[in-house]
Image (cartoon, rainbow over all chains, first blue to last red; front, side, top):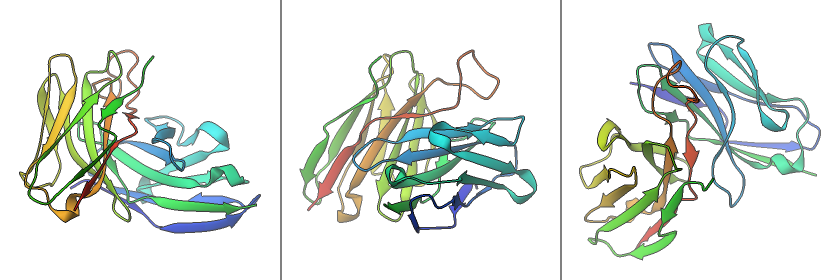
Amino acid sequence: AQSVSQHNHHVILSEAASLELGCNYSYGGTVNLFWYVQYPGQHLQLLLKYFSGDPLVKGIKGFEAEFIKSKFSFNLRKPSVQWSDTAEYFCASRGLEGTALIFGKGTTLSVSS
Amino acid sequence: KAGVTQTPRYLIKTRGQQVTLSCSPISGHRSVSWYQQTPGQGLQFLFEYFSETQRNKGNFPGRFSGRQFSNSRSEMNVSTLELGDSALYLCASSLPGLAGGPVGYTGELFFGEGSRLTVL
């Protein structure tokens, strides 16, 4: 069965610190991978996605993620976080065969100014 | 263009009752997915509909059901409510298809603000 694991439940950082959130997926075939963000009081929105090609994908607000097929991983990174990055982050995967988009349990990021 | 609209936004029910939640997708989107969001469990997939047909189904009991209408609007129903059903129910719409599919397909789901259900 398809699944997504996010390693960190809650991450606390100071402004300007670097961020890396772990994500591993489990699926036997080719997948599309996504990171979504949910800011306090707002709806989920897409940060970035990977379909094919360059395994390093760039998204909005300075976020990037690297797809490492051999490790079934799609970690999210940002070199310098801001207070406004405080939010919940969800990794998700969808198999190319038309399976559902499956989410991890999320990581809460708290950034102190 | 207008986003995904979910109604009602908030509702309170008691155990044993049933509830129906509604979702209007973005115009032109024919695929609708439903998720249950609870603290610590993230988003758990309920079902996905395309052209009035259920395409995928998550691991929820039969008390949870859904349907999609010809105008792509969708409803989900939960019967015999339990305390554990208290959650934020999210609807998301998308263009249907697979990677490399129809022009404009991005695989992205566009989420509504959700319906927050409290069961007492």
